[in-house]
Image (cartoon, rainbow, N blue to C red; front, side, top):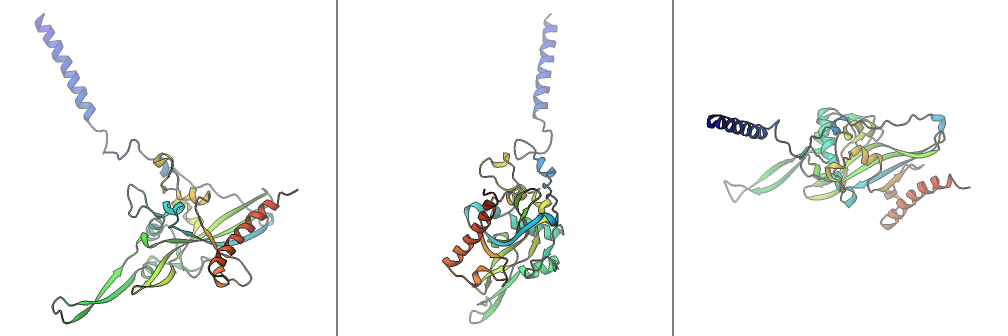
Length: 283
């Protein structure tokens, strides 16, 4: 009887230790989170509705600036370095141009008719700074120190956005479609600020598949409230100000208004768009 009880006890202990060891065996590599993020890789951008030329009875072309230093636009600017599959908008655009997924166009041509190779973009973005420093071998002499500053997404503080507003009488809606985006940096020459410098234009419809597979940091729900760059642009979840509207002189607001007057003119353009839509439904 004692022998039987000992055998049962040993069998029980063997099962217990086997279960414990099995529970400690990992089913796969360590996961940085409580679940696998697979939905983002399957996201497809919502296609644009079909438009007939005969149904478009009003259009307005607008150029606006998205300043990444504004609080609402900070999800475009951060993180400073890629982490956990999360990248800033400028870094995503740069990486995809390098891979050939996105085409860059000449910054002076916002009609997307003059494409640029990655080498041309890189040569335009990179700048060479030189300054005189003391010669380590002879302190009485000076030598030129040449440094090549490569592209950094942190240098992009603004984005220009080109868009078309239109009224579709078939669906009775006023909508807007973004056509292009242009990163802007400060042009520094030997420590002197020479103003804004446009890097290149990208065609927004071409970028939607890429933007739809890259997440933006959600200030409310964190990673659980998945939101992509395509969502942010399509839902207009950013702050901006108008810098130009199409006009017979083809001039920007800064060319005929300065200071507070330019801001008032930009607000006037925004109000014109709003009032046009509201006036359509007056009885």
